Image (cartoon, rainbow, N blue to C red; front, side):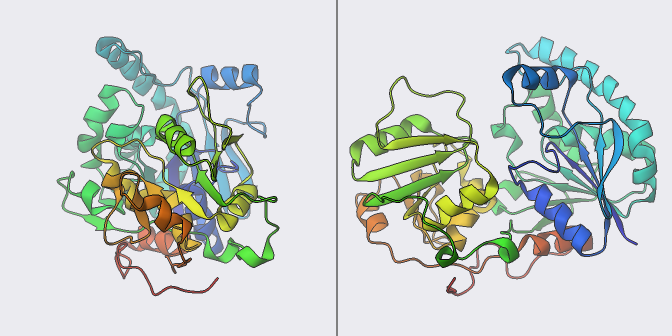
Length: 377
């Protein structure tokens, strides 16, 4: 039996379905044994979640817990998690303390790492465990799956500065965006596109319309990471016939929001899919800053919008001919094109395609920016 160890910042049963959830499920379905390690939780974080009433829905046990056939959860809450304090020296001190504390992972990871066929590491804090893994198993195959631009994430500077060095310890770097790939000087970089869960995505016609009674234009932003809420608020204010829906937690919000901008908070994945499938427009409301272009290939929400054939509205620098559905805020006819858009569903890769590529060390064909002919849902 083939074995894989996945290092992620996510909990395996979270309602927020990130790419590593789909990768783990696909590997298990393909007959692999998977150890899913959640990195970055701390006693402090768990205490804060309990205080806020947002504690995990399951009891978190240390070490290795069986979640189902061939799927196990590895977990170790450390004393604290790296934070951005605003002071480089203090951040670095806390970083060294966290890395020293990370050695407690050795007895938990040692057996799975030694007998695994591949270790797949998610961008962000899990990458900090690569030196530890290399010492434990010098010959193990490590793939760094770069799902996010670390420089744009809220992470301490010491971790961002160390990414290139730790990535160099991996056997392979895998990511979807050629723009992001150009940053890395590594002999083995492959472009492996993000996916959609094609086998579990319901067709629009088989779902109840969650927008009833509908407004002339129903637009949805399916996620709040890197969101530019002020820009989206201005758009809603300027387009009163639109009703804009935001799914996900919003940490900072303007003092006043227009009545046609609805904050839904966190929703179960199936409810979010209802909103996307029946929307008229998909909102890629990312902050307009240099480097955001990588989201064109990496954003899970953009892939869902493309699957359901929606026009996608976002920052102008996000637009590219490879994704004709992307429309910029500043384009003079953006609103008109969204409102008159004819759905063009795209047959995008499934998450199982990415899972297969990650463990076979091959590039998916065709590349991410070659869309398949439109398919009817």
